[in-house]
Each structure stands twice: as structure tokens, then as C-alpha cells.
Image (cartoon, rainbow, N blue to C red; front, side):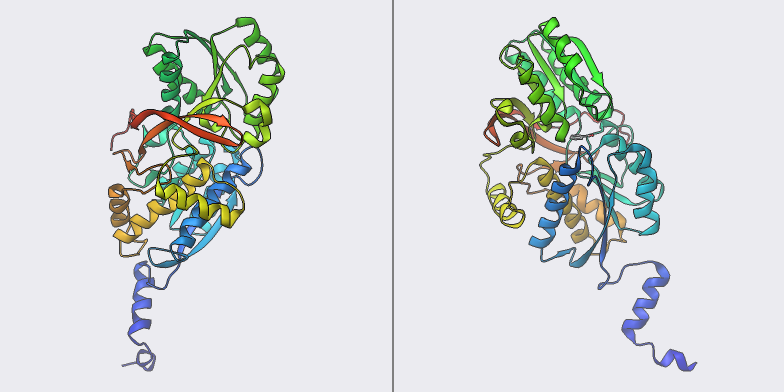
Length: 389
Ligand code: BEZ
């Protein structure tokens, strides 16, 4: 026996074997890569997701799957051109166990390719790109948020029920905006309405005046928009300043007014939107979540914070099923697929394509809150068109 072998005790031997075979040790930390925007139009959304994720970890004793959490963060700037390089920093350089991100659909599509090529588990805590849980669905790809189709489809139904016949849509020209307006149109036209004009401008432009002039000339029954973050607040203020708010009802997917009502001031008052979260939901989980969020961050949570919180809950469910070992990816995946997430939005499960099956609420803006009015569609599952899983 060589002398060095004497000093290898049971723990050291296990560590050495673990390193050799790439398996995680019980005292290893879980490496979480947060790829989110911390600058630009969607900066506040990225911050809320991070807050929500960290809140769940803190409530869980600072751990996930019984292990300490080590965070690695990259500002993706909501820039699809930088997405592959940014995702590679977390996946290849930092070798994170899970990639959490992001807000912008175009960035998320590029991230998902990096994650899939490297067999890294990915949880999307916002980006609604339909493809991620459609044609690009994958065993390692999960979402704690929504598809662009889900809230939009619900608003199409609501707008038709309100008796509107002729609607104009306006959005940023990228996956989220285009899929949101398509989802709206699908439900609205199925119910007998007609989208008479679809208008777009490049992301993240906020020069809305020519579009407002055209809306005034077209005189539709209503307008449907997808905007979010700082751009949403500017749009709603401009809509009111153009004198349209009083004459042409404005509807949107709830991103229009989530986290933006304070910046809109009076212009946001009374707006009707649809989303998978609302203020005034009557459930215990939401009450506890909101109390803790307000205590920790000195502000009220929004849908983005909820999605971040639920991304952490989802990963915790996977790790718990894998005995806390992130390297047992198949077991982690099975645990996540079977999870029933006790979300502040109301409990949800995942579809076969790994997207939440969830209630979509109709909400009305009142002060700085999006107060729940009704459930527009209960247990709405994305059709997951093209997903072959
Ligand atoms: C998206 O790009 O998918 C998105 C961005 C902000 C809010 C909602 C969706």
C-alpha cells in the first residue's frame, strides 16, 4: 500500500470518487445562474424575479434541496444579440446546475439553445415565447411563468364578451408582442370579432405618436396592446394625453399594468387587463408571500416576483425528488414534472410541455393595484402546438 493511501479517510475517498465521476457531494452548494436584465426597459422586471427567487430560498432556510445556494448573475440587457455569449458565461464558464432566465422572449430563445446543447436544466421565470413550450420543448426546459398566448387569448374572449366588434392591435415587433396579439386575435375572431389593423414598432421604441394618430382616425371599438416595463407606462400616459382613453377602451395582457401603475398615475386608472396574477386574490399563500415580500423589499410584489418565487419552488421540488443532488438530472426532472406548486397566484401543475396550467384573471387598475374582477378562464393550458414530448 502506498503511504498516501493511508491518509484517505472515508469522507475524502467519497469526495475523490464524487469528483472523478462528476456527482455532487452533500456539502456542495447548488449553483444557480440568474440571467436577467438589470438595465434597460425590463430592468425592474429582472429585479422583481431575483427578489422572488431569493425570497423562496430565504424562507427555505437559505437552501435548495438541503444545500446552500451559490448565485451567479449576468445582466442580459434584454439584448438577443448578446444572449448566446451571456448564457455561455453561466453554462460553460460557471458550470451552473440550473439556468434561470429570462424576461425577454428573444433572449430566452437563444438561451434555451445554449442550455439544450449543454444539457443544462433551464427554468424560464418570465419570457412567454410560445416556442419554448411548443416546437422547442425539451425534457430539460421548464417554465414558471406563462406563454404569450395564455393571457392574450383570455383577453380576446373578454373583449368579445364586452360586445366589441372592431379592434386595432399595437405592440413591439418581436416574439412576445407578435404572439400576444395573435393569441388575442385567435379568441376574439373565434367569438365573431375582427382585428382590423395590426400595428407594430421596434422594441424598445416608445415613439407612439404616429400610432395614436392612426388609432384616432380608424376609430375602432377598442385597442389591444402588449407592452411591459417602462415602455408600458409611457404608452398609457401617451394614450391618455392623446385624448383616446375616454373614447376608445384600451385592453392589454396584464404586463401593461403590472409594476407600472405608479409611473402611469391617473392614466392607468380603470384599465382592464388579463393575467395569471392579481391583487386581492383570496388565498393564504399569497397573503404570506406578500407580507414577507413587503417586509424584505419595502415594496409590493408583482407578477414577476411571483414567477421568480415559483421558479425557486419548482427547482426545490426537483431537488427534493433527487435527494438534493442536482447532478441526478433525470430525478430532478421527474420531481419537477410531478410538482404541484403552491403559488401565490393559486396552485398550479405543469402541462406535458412543462408550462403552467393556470387560471387567468380579469383585473382592473385601482390606485397602484390590479384588483381581481373575475376569473376570465379557469385552468388554461397552452395548446403547446408543435411540442413532441
Ligand atoms: C417577453 O418578452 O416574453 C415578455 C417581456 C415582458 C413581459 C412579458 C413578456
